[in-house]
Image 1 (tube, one colour):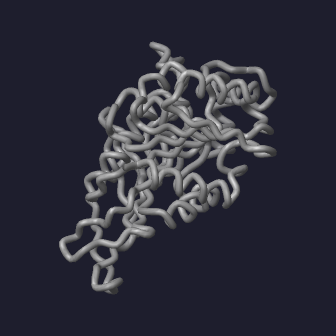
Image 2 (tube, one colour):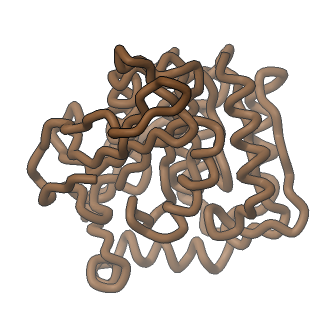
Length: 283
């Protein structure tokens, strides 16, 4: 994979791998910077995974999974790479760092303008020739995939939200009270920058963005899967149940026994089930 410094938008320089599979060229991974509609450079990685390309460079029928990480994550973090490896069994994978995270530019808005980051990653996935896109988000990323599907209808063919909140400003658990301190206080944002390598915007939301539970009814008829652990320490089970109720018959809820929060709590078996679900529902 090639890489460039944050703030520089590189052209994709992918070339077919020198080997072939069943007479078809297999492409190598690509790393580049994408430009969002509001001008932020987003560090992104494409990995062909299970996808085989023909001699014309067209991908096979496999989908591409676009993974939206949780708050303080980044494309190079081990838990994000583990997620990518799991989904690579079912298709190609695009991972990226949200604004303010990793090598991406800008500052985190904790789920608001991150929708533009996901939109850029989804369009890049489609530009690579994939007709089917599955968006999978974890925690903050879970709220982003819901809002993206509502605000950009038809750009994702299936949506998976894992460990997402249903509503904004939730402070009902100790981890969420700590997160609010991190985001809203100057000393918290300093800890975010130097302790978690996450640059957080100092401005409050204005206007307040569409909440996840408000976004969900707008996603239909796109297939939607809501995944949540019954031992989630950040968001209790009323959050996924609110999302599922808002989705009605268009959504599916998996309430996972003993599962904690987001990427770190998602076991290999669950990731395989999500991969199978996405590949099957994306059309």
